[in-house]
Image (cartoon, rainbow, N blue to C red; front, top):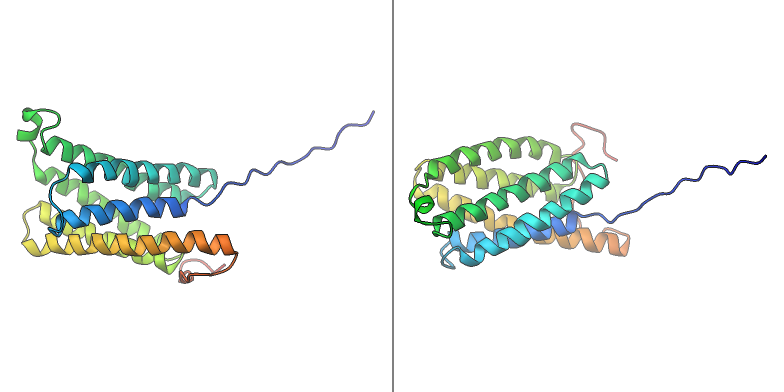
Length: 206
């Protein structure tokens, strides 16, 4: 009796990095515009934080998990939940959930959260060194952002608020470039926009 030979089915899914970087780019552009005084209020910023900063990056994280990409999955998920939390914090501050919560906020609690994210991002920056240079630049800018946010939350001079604002604006710009490079390089099957090779310090270059 003949037995059918086993067959292998390969499921191919697209690289989610572009949509994750796009979400990061848009939310940081909007949030930095408020920090820099180019726009006012947080009402519209909250919606972009939820749908672009949070949901777009969470989607990218889930897709990266299917690629067995622990680095991408962890990074996108961590920052997605950051934006979920920030949108909620803004809504609390604006009184959406009532005057009791709005009147009981303590900005130093954000400082501890920002400090935790700073440590996390420093670790991830080391990992980004072995992906590509555009991603490494983005993580370096995120380091600066969280440094500024942390010190600002603990009452440091205004300089650190401005430092965070400009770092956030730069994150948006570089992330837009990274998104475009990710899409077009795959679409054309060649390096249409350069992203820079990994440093090759901690593991051999591919």
